[in-house]
Length: 133
Image (cartoon, rainbow, N blue to C red; front, side):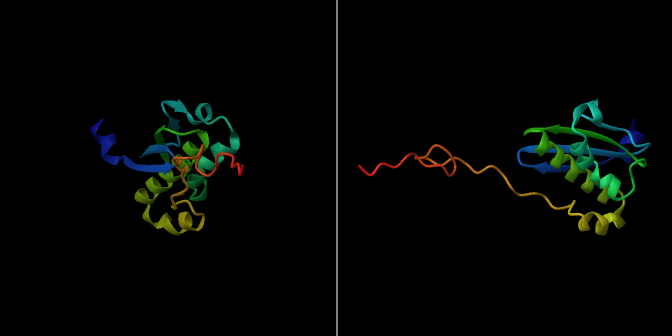
């Protein structure tokens, strides 16, 4: 057990309100998300491809085992958080992958968040109906 934790690399990815903690261990390419297979957790194939894009970009699909814990937000935010977490973990594991990851934009944290609701109106931007008379 102590040997596996010494080889493990951890990284965090965030997107909207989702947070993904990625644990990268040298292995055969097994990937679990919240103690489930990635195919069971991310049902949509295009989203699954997007989440695992850092591995396919760097051709490291079968070199590492991934254990991912993700919470908060919806499935799209979670996929974005997983993607950033995997890219950051790969960067720690193999330093010379940075140009390939950077060119695809996989190391950039997406800063877009939900805008807060303001007082005196029903939403962030929407206003109550104006009546002149």
